[in-house]
Structure formats: structure tokens, C-alpha cells
Image (tube, rainbow, N blue to C red; front, top):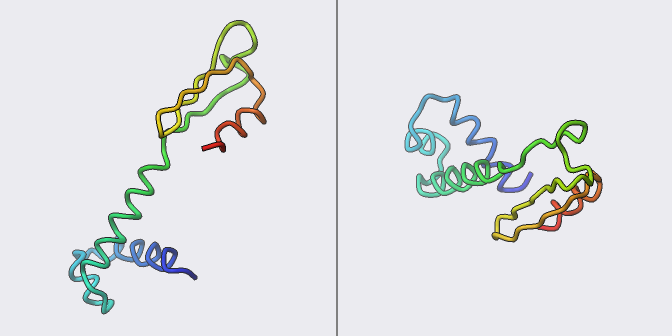
Length: 96
């Protein structure tokens, strides 16, 4: 188990503990700033995983009739396509 996985498990345990971060980190023999760093880091990663929307190809997805799907990457790059091909869309999403 790497450090990230270890800290993720500790943070899950912390969320069930009912203790403050200072109390919990002290009970685990860990410096509070270290625990707080990982807490903030993993919380931010969890929040950043959003941004995707479900695309139903049977109803309302681009079908070559002039409708377009627009992908906006986190770096601001915009990509428009009229393809309803899910494998192509999957590859485009993974480009980032």
C-alpha cells in the first residue's frame, strides 16, 4: 500500500471518528500539519473528479443532423464534434 492509499484510509477512519483533525492525528502519532495536508489534498482531488456529464446516445446526442457535442478540457481547450461514436468520444476524453 502506498502513502496515498494509506492516508485515504486514515481520512475515512477520521470521518467516522467524531474527533477533530488535531485529536485524530495526535491519536495516530502523526503531526497535525501532515494530516491536514493530506486531508486537503485528497479532498481537492475528490472535488476535481467532477465535470463529466452522462451522454445518452439514444436521445439527444449528436447524430450528424447538425447537432454538436462540445468537450471542454480543464486547461480551457474546447473540442466540438458532431460524432455520436462513443469510442471516439472516449478517446477524446482521455486525451487530457
